[in-house]
Length: 478
Image 1 (tube, rainbow, N blue to C red):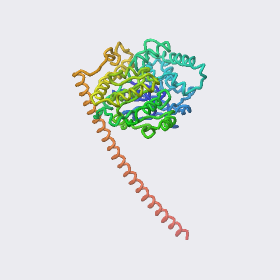
Image 2 (cartoon, helix red, strand yellow):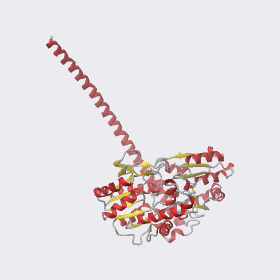
Image 3 (cartoon, rainbow, N blue to C red):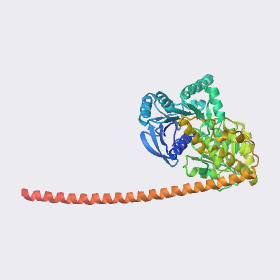
Image 4 (tube, rainbow, N blue to C red):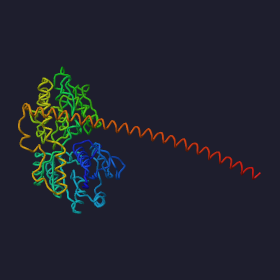
């Protein structure tokens, strides 16, 4: 099939929606589909490019955009010039299906164009409008509730254009239906390739290290993580690693200094795909204090790394973090409770850490990205979900675990071993590709040097010839 994925955010942006779109596109390419991504340009350069994402070559149509000044990563596409371009793009690509990842500018106008041209349309919602409004418009407090209601209704009007509407979790689907007036929203996990995060290191709290990965924006409530760690006994020697960037980074850096823990906090910014799994490997526990997660891909990556998670009991996070099984939940903004749950992990013995770790690995199996890809392929073909769903929506997923049975324990061990083998094989392939690239680059450098030398020699010959010709003309004139 030829599939268009329309995004208002796409790598190099770092956020859950961008990462899902990237992995979806790459997974479809690996299955033999022709995928076109339409997304804002991340610089002044725009047009059609062949880009490599998640180790797959993807056609990306970068649309001229500007940075929206209140937000560190949000790009703004001018709607009045994009509307006719959206129609032209779809006519030229002629896709079998369009998959919109938002109801903002790119997603909105590509959805309208798809509907107008009779192209099958799937729409996935990753957005809570209240989070977006904070960075896009300034409204008085008395009007905020009305503004949120209007934003949700507007989202419903755009999403209603789609043949199928999806969102990553059942809780997110219920919220979307209640707030926008939609019905029949499908809950389909974003999915994850767990093998990319498999590791050989057991969870250890010596030294105790907590990791956060994500945008450093207000709704992530990373300030609560800093306050919680600062309230723990200094004798624990807790270290914090923060991966990501955003509008709150300066204020968080200042807060760490104010709390007296600046030496124990590392702001790593954006990291490479190769470095990210190593960050999870180093961690004792992953923390997600956000109050606005419709799923949380970063939390899923931590679980695939076999790490326990401490998360806010908000939105869809309880769907991933089963309290007492693979980590702990705390009441949003309750810093004291947050600190207590972290301390339980920092003071746990190795047997307890292994139990939490294995339960994370067990639960993440329900989010296999291949299942996600299967379901979306059915939607693109117009076959519908037909009761098929990702395994995290089965009743068994929500059952308490406690200690895994021997058969499940052995299953997790086998999964971990297989995942490590796949990760090692992928790493070896990347190294060979890099070696090959360097070899080709060296050959190109040699060829370039030969060409430059040849041009210099030819230039000297021409110069000498011209000098002789000039001397001959001079002798004739004399």
